[in-house]
Structures are given as C-alpha cells and as structure tokens.
Length: 480
Image 1 (spheres, rainbow, N blue to C red):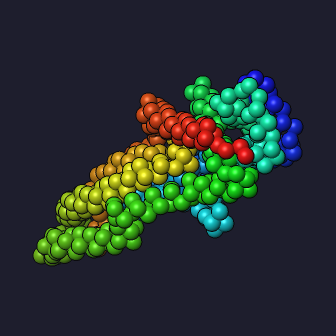
Image 2 (cartoon, helix red, strand yellow):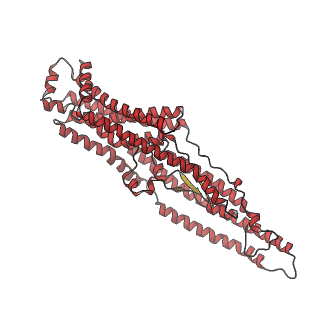
Image 3 (cartoon, rainbow, N blue to C red):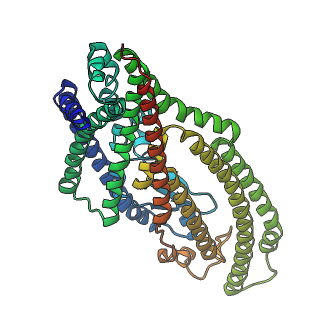
C-alpha cells in the first residue's frame, strides 16, 4: 500500500498543472541565474587581470618613493569560479583594494554596489533563486497534501482502507517531494551543462565536489520548506488556510528572523560607525603631523643657517645629504609610531565588528534561510569569513608595502633648497621591482568544509524536526 500511495502522489504531482508551470519556470530561472553568474564572474576576472597592469602604468610615472606611497598599489583577490552560484558579499564590497603608505587599505566597491537598483533589490544568482523563489515553489507541492484531501472528502475514504496513518503521511511526503526533486534536479543539470560547455570556466575536482554539495544542500533547504507546507496542511482544515500559514512562516524565516538577528546583535554588541573611525584616524594623523613638525624644527634651523665664507658645492651637497638623512630618520620614526597607533585603532574596531558578526551569525541561524546563506557562500568562497580573510591579508601586505616605501625614502627627502651635483629626481626615481607582490591565499579547505558541513547538518536538523511535527500532527488530524 505504501508503494501505491507514493506512486499515486508522484504521478498526480508530475501530471498536475502546477508541475507543468513550475518545471519550465525553474529551468528558465536557473538558466538566467547561471547566465548572470557567468557574466559577473568574467567581469571580476577581467578586473583582476587588468587592475595590476593599470596601476603599474600609473606608478611608472612617479618620480620618487613619496609619490609611490601616496598613489599606492591596487591589489585584487582572484574570484572563485563558484561565484557563479553565489555572488555573496563580494558583489557589494568588491575584490579589489587600494593599499597606500601611512593609511589602512580601502576596499573598492563592487560592481553591484555602484548600481542603485542592485543595492535596492539585490543580485540575481542561483543562491537568490533557490532561497526566495524555489522555497515558495516548495510550498505549492505540499500545502494541500492533507487539507486538500479533506476538502474533497477523499481523506476519509483513504483512511477507510487497511493502511496506517504513518504510511499515508510518509507516502504523500515522499511522492510529492520526489516530484519537486525531479524538477529541481533536471533544472540544475541543465544549468550545470550550460556552465560546463558554454562558459569556458574550468573546475577542479574539489570544485566539482563542492558543486555536488551545493546541490544537496539546496535540495535539503527546499525540503525544509516542503516540510513546512506539509506541516501547515496537517494543522489546517482548508487549503487556503494552510497556504496562508505557510506564507506567514516563510516571511518569518526568510526576512524577519535574519533582520531581527542583526538588530539584536547590534544592540548587544554596538560598533562605532565608519565615520567615527575616520574621525579618529584624521585626529591621529593631525597629532602625528604636529609632532613631526616640532621634531623637525631644530634640524631645519641648523640646516638653514648658512656657513661663513666661501664653501664648495661639494661641501654644501654633503651637508644637504646629512640633513636629508636626519629628516628621513625623524620621518621614519614618526611614521612607525603613527602606523602602530593606527593599526591598534583598526584592530580594536575590527575586533568589535567581528564580535558583532559572530553574534549575528548565532542568532540568525535560528532561520534555515540564514543557514543556507552561510552554507552556499562558504562553498562559493564569497561569504563573510572570506571577507575577513581578505582584509587580514591586505593589512599584512600594507605593512610590508609601507615598510618598503619608508626604507626607500630614507635619506632621499627633497628639502627646501637643493644643492645638487646630480639631478635629485633621477637619484630618487623608484625601482618598482622593490614593491612586494600580493598573493591572496584562500582559507584552509578543512576549515571551509567544517563550516559548510556544520550548516548542512543544521539544515538537516530543521528538516527532521519539522517533518516530525507534521507526522505527529497528522496522527491526531480529524478527517471529518
């Protein structure tokens, strides 16, 4: 009997009008999402390959290391090919950063952040389609599984047969979810073929494993909302009530809980605004500038005092070089102190920000939608943890860059009056080979997989608990 129930529900779902509408719609949505994902990935790859070349052309016009430090270098994080599945936070923050001397690295805004429409509505990718659209489709396969049978009177007839309620609810759940799984799987395969054949994107063996896991996690996520629709059907007497209850829970899980988690965490872990951080940086820079000028007063006074009698150009040049070294030494000490205070200020701000992110992640995971967000962006390397890793590596690189610029500027200060036996700008023209290269290192795969599997496990727990509620509800359901 169980097999007959499963077969009946599967055939009815596949032959139903809603399947005829949902399956082509899912294929079209996946096609568009993968097409947009491929376009975004190629744009990020182009930016990655061109930013260094364009910046190098600018640096080659510098006449001294001071100009190099002020112009800075642009570095980028090579995008992951799995960006096709989830643009994540990098669509807003971007994957290019500017590193300058005596300041913190600044992230250049992503392409999506420069478009107000994208900022308002968000990006269109596989992640969005599954999270929002297909979760609604999942309800349509389950919301009338029990309440619909009651409205038509067939539930009482079905219960009159020698079949247990456990077999009925299990058969209905399996049969209808199989039809949802068939639609999702076929659409996913069509989209994956598009990526493999038409996009020239090459995936490693681990990338393919991640894609399989993204497929399974997405199916598990849809299973949660299917179970919610089934639960609502077992709690309501009419299909319309079941659908409204499902939609209420959907809004709660998709929007309310994640946004409430941000608000609650912000209240418990307040973080200074970026404007406050900039104000503190400006005040620190002003204080250090005043301190440097005060320390330079005595060496400048000595240098400006003219020696009596006729002095050769060679002697004047020697004195000038001594003064330049003294000014360079004072500047280097000042910059080292400034950098230490600046890094301390930044680390304090970053620590508060990450504490806020950690608390938000804990609270938001009460929603399966948030678990899915963390799960798919973790595998696609576009999540919050990847931003943190990129920022940490940027800060380490900035320290190396500033150290090189400071060392190369030492003794090459061009001061007010130049006694020169040679062209001073020729002497100080920078050797760009001294600038260190930036190489982004992805986070360890063990850490990434541990987090992804943890969120996948949490999705499994949600699916199991909601399915149990559905089962218990149906055991006491009144078919009259």
